[in-house]
Length: 303
Image (tube, rainbow, N blue to C red):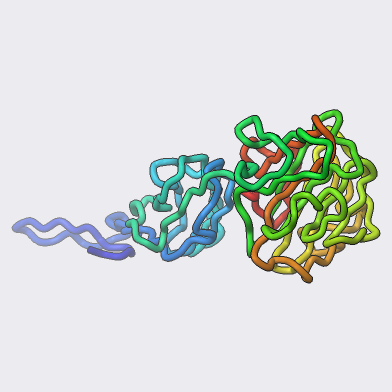
């Protein structure tokens, strides 16, 4: 079997063989081959941008995650495609590429793992109740309390959003990221072991101290967090406003991030929320319901 190329089709009879000319040429198109993908896992909600590396991708007509078509894909070169994963159940699937030459054979090199989406952790909370599929936490005691997410991250660049209810407005109501070892009963007072923004004013605190950065107060407004564990920086903004309160700051270019290197990534960063009043509530969105604002370039949904 030919791997690709142009051949002449000839016909032979008792009187001879046809003369080769440009009109008899047939092109064999090589079958695409996937040699690696990155990242190799993503959320069941979809939306993970995956770089597919291999050969013979020119003219690709389809990219699939298992039996499901990619939400979108771009052929960057004959050896690279970027594709966005569709939503799927928890599973391991093969990422395949189809061209006029056929569909890539599956192998361990093309496998993508769908991981169940993040929620608040019902086994890692203090003084709060969970609802809405464990996406919403509500204070049930007049004390400093909090909760962490079910998942943590130790490397990479991640984006998530939080939305409070109408009374999520206390100076001790906050959202952000925390270590797994951080005390949930002190997050609301000084963010020890965490990086949080507090609702009443919009002050950003890190590991027990005010950073000097204020964004905007918020209640029902969407709070965005961009966490870069490679550069060890974090950014917050309210309702799509300026990152860390400055129009020139941008997670995509690693400008203006708050230095969190003294404790992160450590044993891992969890999404976290805290309250100190009954009824104060916030809902986590790791990407499970679509984001209100665009993810910074180079970042991915927390998932």
